Length: 18
Image (tube, rainbow, N blue to C red; front, side):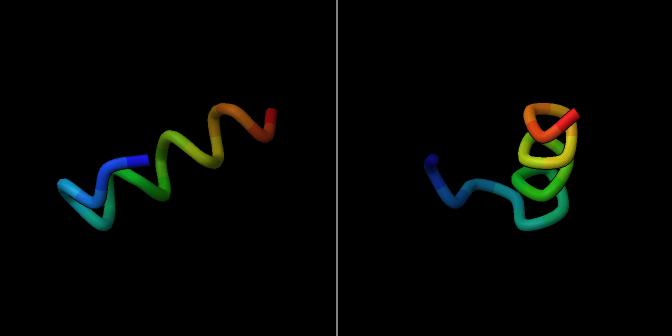
């Protein structure tokens, strides 16, 4: 994943984890 926004990156991981 591209490190664009730290918070946004965490959100994507959480959604994918679900």
